Structures are given as structure tokens and as C-alpha cells.
Length: 197
Image (tube, helix red, strand yellow):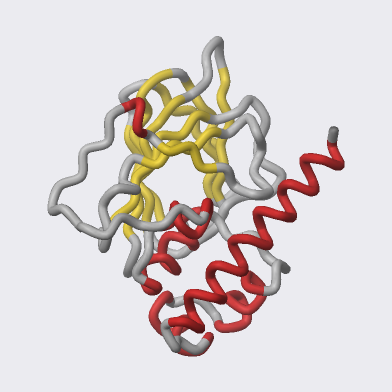
């Protein structure tokens, strides 16, 4: 069972890396130019394209913005819609579940903004697992989190915080951070981050 999960993870990473590289080349954007526009190091982007680093969703969002596609396309290969609308409404039934290749299966990301093309921010409904992820997240920019239900332990730059329903926190996401559900029910929260500096 573990080998099948590992194989699926590798296939997802390979697909994401391939889509980024293909889009970048199709748009005649060099790694250096992509690095300048995203604010990431050229070496880091090269590692992503060569499957040596798994980027967090926020990193993929910045890359998607520069490549003029939706982050869901990078993750799933779903082709963006042709006609952009100025408003995007996503009902609960329309939310797209996104799986991070090396992320814990206990963590569930639901994209709330995938319908809008050329957006300046991305939002996800996130349900946290009871275990901390293997590695903390760290990515450029700021992140806003609003707790919808449950309770979670949020570890930010080595310090632990307990946050509950109704709490909201904003932080510099370039510092290591991760969380886990604590209590009787899973922590569900809204996460919003911008796609450019």
C-alpha cells in the first residue's frame, strides 16, 4: 500500500514538474526570468522542474501567476476556462480538492478560487490532520488564516500557538510553519495568500 502511495506521489511530482517546464518553454520564459518574476532562486526553480524539491501550494501559485495559468492546472492538468469572468462563485459542491504530492493524506485542501483567471490571491479551505506534516512549510509572502471550526496547534518559527474557532492570524510565510488538529474534531480553516509580492 505504501509503495502505491509513493508511486502516486512521484507521478504527481513528475506531472507538476513537466507542466511547469512545458509552460515555461512554450511561453519562451527562461528559468532566470521566471526567478526574477516570482522572487524565487533560479536554482530552486530548477530543482522543482527536476523533481528534487516539492514546492508548497503557495509557491506553485506564484509560478502559476507568472505563467498565466491557475494553480489547479499545475496540480491536476485541468485546462483553464477560456472566458474569464470578473466574478467567481464557487459553491461547496464545486470546490476542487487538491492533493500536495508529499503532503499527508490527512490534510485536505479545497480550492475556492480556481475559477478566476488572472487573480491576485488564492484561497483554500484546509482541514488539518492530527499529526504534524513531515516538514514545515516555508514560502515567500504573507498568509492569512481564519479558523472556521475546531482547534489547532500552529507552530510558527519554532513557537507553538493554540488557535480556535473564530481566531484569525496573519504571518510572514517565509518562516517555517505547520499545524495539526487537536481536540475532538478536525480543525477547518480558510487560508488566503497573494500570488505576487
